[in-house]
Image 1 (tube, rainbow, N blue to C red):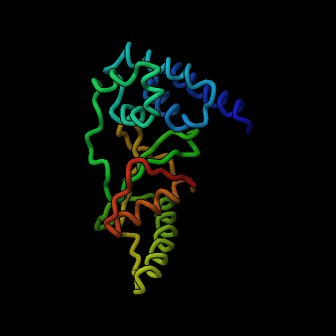
Image 2: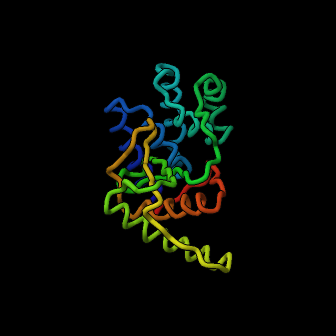
Length: 203
């Protein structure tokens, strides 16, 4: 796919989200593909500036966080930098164990957050349980080689949820695109190593 066709595809997705009045979805779509959007960036920044000016109360904290990852020069050019300072940010801990943001293939690259936790028993669907078991076995094998000792894997002791930009759980995503983010989140939880918020993965 050429840069122009990719940009046009993303632009169509943004237009559809706008038609649904899904402002935060449009912002997250722009953020997910921003660095590959080339010549349409200025127009998209103008659209974001319009959203922020006309309906600031509708801009969600995760959307503000996503906008704050844009190059400072681009934010300054669109006069967004001073406006963003007045919008609510996501005050959740920015480096947490077992948590990772990632783009989902089945939702055309929309961002989801995976949150992995220790539980006495898992409430996962059979398909998610199978994926967790496969991923967990691989992670524990890698850890075993690293620490040179036996690492036991008990999938029933772990649970995870996927949430969208509005903090709503998304139960529809159960494909392989969350395999790598699940592995990173699990490694983070087991080792106690936080995943930086600017790290993402898919596939």
